[in-house]
Image (cartoon, rainbow, N blue to C red; front, side):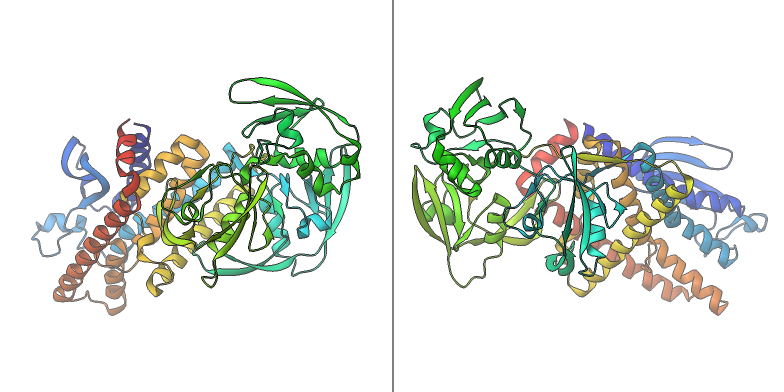
Length: 553
């Protein structure tokens, strides 16, 4: 039921504001408004005002304002013509029609401007993990560091940090890092890297490899039953809560703690699926002579994220012989540090040679030759994406530690206005760019979403909290305003085109031209509606019944 409530609130607000824009400007110019309706079709509620009938109709995907004389061919009594829409000056008709989409853009601006008042949650500049031997690692960054400034510019979030890095033009940067009670200074030089942008296109920007705001929980995996860890009672799936009384929030913190440990007696507090218990471990002298990277291997403790939780039948991994419980070690000779790295290696397969995967099973190193295959890509909320991905059918159950968050607040009116304007412009531009890429074929038409997609976004954001719901409402409001300004007959933008023509030529387009354009517009609109509905059903086909049940649950 929460999904249905979310859809009703979101669409209700957007449609009401859109139609209110038309209504208010019509009233401003003394144009008689006969009907103000939220929704289409049969009326489920109506109230007659002084001269306007206000109603709520059964189909919620739209609304309308009916004005006197919208049909320019209709005959009106002479005493009413001054209040007729079709008899109003072209500029007045232009402003009345433009007021709808402009109201949606104004609404988006005010929503965005209000967000800092309630607080915008952002990922803080806390470094949850640093990939060993990466550029960030070699520069001196370590897990649990917190970046406070870059080149003396304050940094509170990961977003702040990477914006400054991207603007560096490859120049050396100096950052202050809070590490425990100490402050460290670290120098590093960003390098150009190519990644996919929001449209799946390659985009090059400056970055530093190896920093992550996410880290897995300290859940262990045991791949060698003869290891020291196994002999002391550790089992795959155990979560280490603390070592020698030091609480552990994530696997990287455990990893670094054990690498740098100086004492031989360790007391682990461990949580299994059934119970919480202690494990005492005495490290032999040999442990302290090992290189830091070999210490965890010696104990036999590994992060559970590199353990296969499930192998889907009849997939490349299944046919190659991988099994649940195997620990991934390397792919094509490259040691794998985390599951995301493994996933990206599979997705980036060059199609030339099969993947050579090494895994540990019961203490023995096994080799597998795997040919990935293309499969449809589904993600939560969004459903099926148009771009398929290479996969092998091996699944890991990675559980991440809660991210360290920073809540951005602002109360200064100038800051709020600037924030609202920047966000509104960003999403307006993104909508424009998306349209261009759809027209040029760089973004497939399958990426368009319809009412089910909007409902899924509304419902999931509603359940996440007020910030997320308002943000989605503002983004969709920008989309609605932009699309209604396009010069497509039937839409507001089509009418604006005709009124603009009339203002320039001092005469309206011919009725024949207008009728032909209206027919083309209706056909385009119907085709678009069929396309987005088809996309929605195809996108959610695997969990279509689940979406419907969630709407009414």
